[in-house]
Image: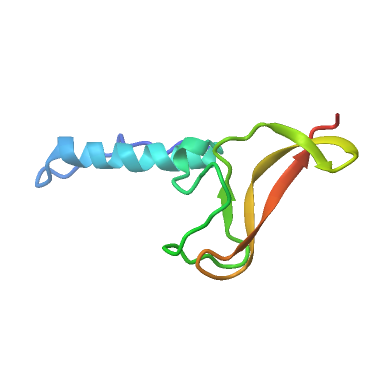
Length: 106
């Protein structure tokens, strides 16, 4: 898939520098999202969602902004994992979340 481009002509009745700046911001975010870059995700955080300001629905995903290899998946089990984020399993404000994990193979 090709990236979005802002090389389209801007009509003369609009301020070209302002329109190009807006379009560059939009296309940068869309391109980063399509490439899977965390910088394009404004909802990434370092801990499980909490608080009373955001309502979540079942299936909502919140990326972990601090993905690192973590200890074993369970006490006594030697299997490391990386937490990709959290998935909402019960709706609410903030809802109920479970970790989305990927085993490292070690």
